[in-house]
Length: 271
Image 1 (cartoon, helix red, strand yellow):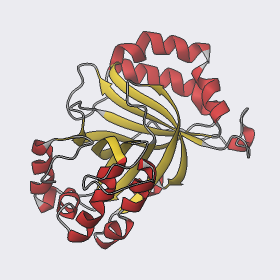
Image 2 (cartoon, one colour):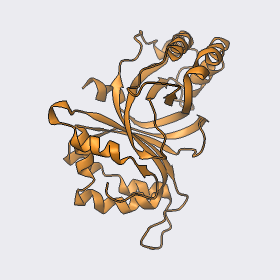
Image 3 (cartoon, one colour):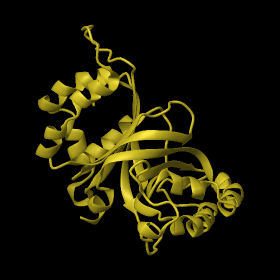
Image 4 (tube, rainbow, N blue to C red):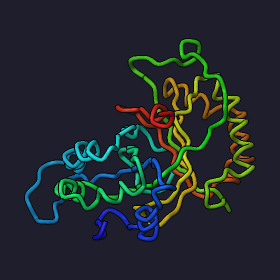
């Protein structure tokens, strides 16, 4: 990643750490991407363009290059609604699992990858790309979605809720503060009967591309419907726990409701 892109700041110290991790300490890493698109693609070479930024990013999508290096797209979703977080209002979220940290860095210099990058540069207004590692989520027996109050329907199918979290006075390894643990326990008592399933919780190893902010954890929770999630959000017990614990624990966050077209997060963690 030699040249600074227009859509974010590179953390070169983290990039060096990715590139120099000893092979015996290296291993899989999940790159979580938050994406905000330009209304119209803007190519640096001045070419005429009538396509949207999203369409330019779709042209860029280096699925073939990823396959060559043993990487896999394990999650793609459009943002249905952004509930928490300052600008930008994100458009899409994706996760790519790489076999090693080093392979992510080495991909940047591949000619077949660089050939595609002009389309990403044209389409992307802003992005955050965080290298993440799975952490064990709370254990619990999931409820069958046929038995919940708001099951999935044709009009309102499953949604994934992403929480991008910066904890107040958190340690750099993504450890969850006690106040957040207390909130989790209270929220789970409400969410589990509504059918929540944890797709994957991650600690943030580092943010290679972004706006200079650092993050501690990124969590993906799946609900049978948007209605089910909203029932949890408006539950008085959860609201009380949020005021007493969650707001104390969190210094910065994005929370979004996502509609996924690819969701293999759980399988990618277990494989």
